[in-house]
Amino acid sequence: MGGLADLVQTRSISRFGLSQVTLVFEDWVDIYRARQMVSERLQGVVPELPEGIQPGLGPVTTGLGEVHFYTLQASTPAVGAARVAQLMELKSVQDWYVKPRLLTVPGVAEVNSIGGFEKQFHVNPTSAKWRNTASTSTTSSGPWRTQTATWAAVTSSRRVSSSSSSHRPP
Image (cartoon, rainbow, N blue to C red; front, side, top):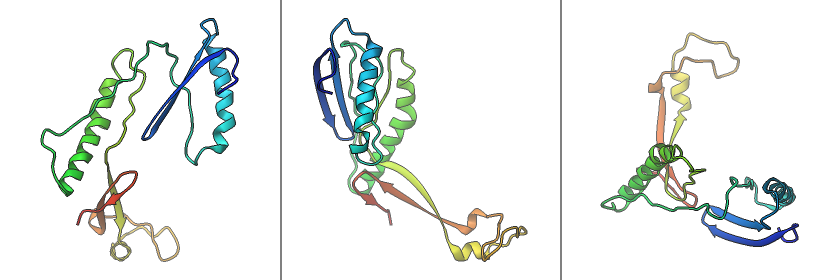
């Protein structure tokens, strides 16, 4: 961002999963002109970023805007596999209860979650069970027929994953 017209100061902070660059312009610079210049510079670096990373501009704020960090913690941390399940539950509480409510507070622009284990459900059909499932519909060709699937013919597994590891309960 160096060399932008009327840029006074550049500050940055990086944490796991989040990098923030704050640009301070002269007081008299139109905020939307400054945002346009920054946006043009960002578009120039997109090809150099890792795949899947898309930079963006934050909401229009002043130096009075603040970032607040908070944590959700279990009153009694579990151990081993139970701890992983506990961390998944805390992440679910954050994503489905805390975050939506915080976003209703006037003045809160966004809520970003950092860390935690995401609960995922994977449905893995077993080919033999699908073939053995009787169906009255035979609208497709080949060995697979369009079937009215019964859930009893589907096996499921629960997989826990984070950004760096994967755990599959027995």
